[in-house]
Length: 161
Image (cartoon, rainbow, N blue to C red; front, side):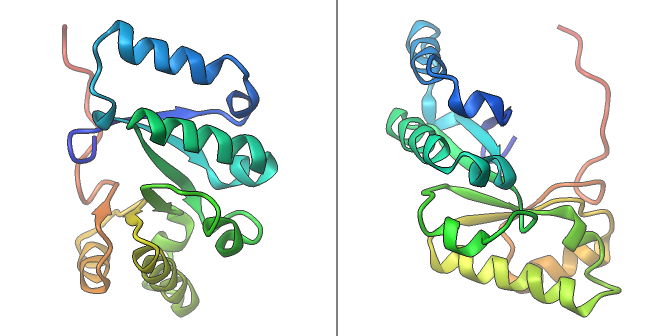
């Protein structure tokens, strides 16, 4: 959870599901959910593959008051040109770059560039696969907003109900 927000991953096929938008809206109302505490993650690759559907779905979710995150950012084609047209709240910087930051100067530069462009666009950033304190310190020093990985919290069992 991020800022008390529960994020739900959407599959590539769900982007073009005509009934999904209405279903989400109905569930928010039926269950009295605070939409500002619900977020949806869409992979960059899925968004680019079906750009118009992704853009329309993102606009609808944001109209409902939900947050939207573009996941695995940096792995798709023409990332920055699409970013200008997708009004998301968060970008999750792909872990393949984060993991190699210490060994590969280009990966470090990519993480920093994505973070800077996101911030200029008013988008908050999340670094994936943050596995140690050294990477965490570097991400903090360049202003990445949030981190996800073993350096933050170890996976654990589901709590009993």
